[in-house]
Length: 294
Figure 1: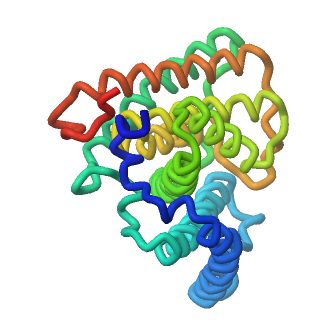
Figure 2 (figure 1 turned 135 degrees about the vertical axis):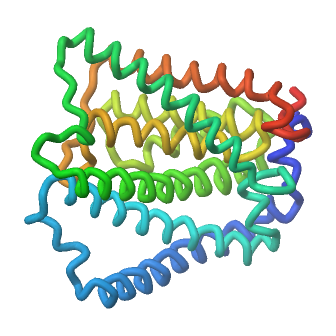
């Protein structure tokens, strides 16, 4: 069954060798610590130590700086993990990104557009069901045009880097590493979804369910479309829709605590993304010849 998925065909016997896995278990955290230290020192020098002093800034600016910090942090973490994997498993970094000859930016844009539509519809229905008035951050009456434009640019860049980092680590390295030890695609997807949910360290049942459903949908996209491009676009778009039209992301945000209706909404979005992946597989000019043959 693994042979039907081009994104997994890069796996070889060395991906199953325990000495390499032990090296990865120790090497990846070490690489993360080293690169995190280098990035923190570099940012501190460039900003005179002011980058993290954001508590007195206007709300949108605080959120913009926080999202940029998040992107830098997660980007550094993902880069460290993948550099360690590159050295230990001795294969090109691109093999954890896509099975296509080139990274498919058109598929990133398409995944983003598809997810934005789905998230927008669900957000509208949720607002109508709960009779809540819309207060999009990008229409904040207390912020000027310059700040709003800075906010949009910052969250777009920060969330793109953060989402790409998460996809590379979870749907790139972890997905392939799991597939090195089992041919059961459903187990691969389930493990990926569970680890993705737990890694966010929010243990409210609704938050865990939402992350697991999203992780499963993104894993399915990577498997069926032969790479991470669609999943990256969809991941960015779902986060971006929240940041632009629902609420700005801030470090003091409480852990998510939703109800059964929120879980149904997340399930609907995950099913919609999975259905969109199946439609996208038939778009030859967009996907190329490497989608799943299953």
